[in-house]
Length: 443
Image 1 (cartoon, one colour):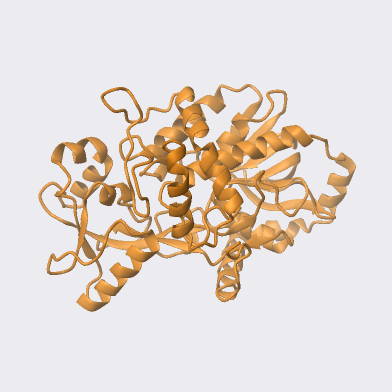
Image 2: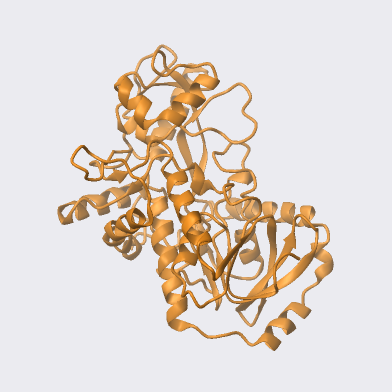
């Protein structure tokens, strides 16, 4: 295999959560980051809208209320407070790393508004904020001598015994070799579950492998049926593959939703689940496969400057948003459930952490508020890194090897079948959890 079999920290996933975790680990620790494909095949690159930043102390109650309301008050209030209180620090840190956020004429950070927000508090870079942040983090991480990023490596299982994680079983996609990789700490940062749905804005390779593996090993998973549908993705006759997202910011800047007769039918700035329900209801009423999104209320110059990628994609599909409405339809977008983790990313298994979309610390509740995802991933991955540094201790290599020896390696030979079984495990768990009370409740 192209990698060694022993590291201080092994991070599964190269999105913003995995990269930011590596960036904040001690520089004297050997860190390995693996990803199923190439690093740019993470949903972090696809985030269009932006990242929330508290707009002064007077904004705290409003921001907190907006997040709780969007999450139907099933959020973990402690996680919400932690995220909001740290938002200025996180965004300022990104700026120091070189992230190029939009600026006002006076040089201050420009902000926009999205659905569910009561005011402008979202920092952005055109309509590709996720790409700007992730590419900047990737550049900074590759500058670190203690961190190695290896693409085309698939996690097939974890090595554990006595509720303690000692590493993972990994497959080199290029050589086909399968081997155990040991680590003092393992971080699950492997993204969402969009790949198990027919229509999703996610990359198809994100199939919830980490979720399934944790379910199989008795690691707590919460709110697995909390799956967010984004109200607006570009409708095309060929709906196979990844759905193209039309950012929430488009509606935040003034775009309106229209029915088949081009009449406005809802308040576009309600939380995503409310807007999605209104669209589905209108589609059923009209007997259509989509509704229209009219961007023409937004000034032409602003569309060209703020939403260049969306403008280009629409034109590729034969629509000019500057002159006409575009067809949109809801699609699976985000996963609010996941591997149970606390505010430091710790799971219910020793030495196993979970951060980013693959975890559930309760910050989003039953429905994520727009542009909280990048912030959540960055903050809690940083806290996980700092926690590992604080409690640092090595594993017993003999215990790790013994745990690996108990695994049946024959089940990893047909890895495609194994990954398909993982998808079915997640689907089954979602179905079974539909009527289960959420872990955080309303407290």
